[in-house]
Image 1 (cartoon, rainbow, N blue to C red):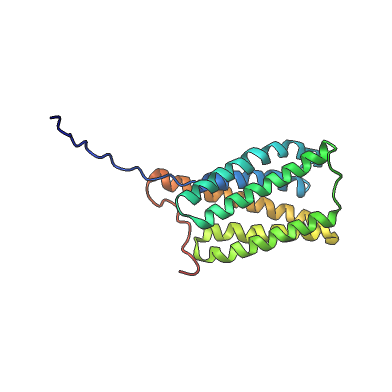
Image 2: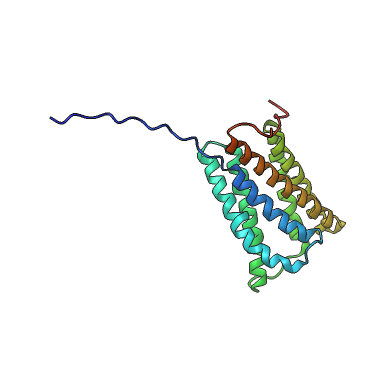
Length: 199
């Protein structure tokens, strides 16, 4: 009779943190579009940003969001999938208008949608009071950006300022991603992300 030989169990590897991927996809794409909104790049540059929004801003964040759900991080899953699909909305809107499939919507329509995204981001920002201060700062800058861009499309002349806040938001997100990758690679806290405001 054959005997069953017990094989030594292999140690389970710690799952990687998908957060930096999502933050980089969000941050880099946000910087690119915000440079247009701030007037640092011409509006024609949007044609180069649309594929970036589909790929790094959209798909990368969707991947990060799904992985966040798999490891039980509800906030990360909701945030990354939501903003990944925001970039798909932006890219599809510009693509379909550029192809002549849809007429350009009135500014008030874009203003309303940006306002709704600002409200959503403000609500998620409240949740970040229980997360680290680095993520808190990204969402703080982001809801301000959305409200400024929305007000600009409503005719209050704040769009360019919203572009500069968007640049700050994108840079902040990429810095947080860098810190998370650095800490994970060093297997220790090299740069702290800051304790939550509410424990």
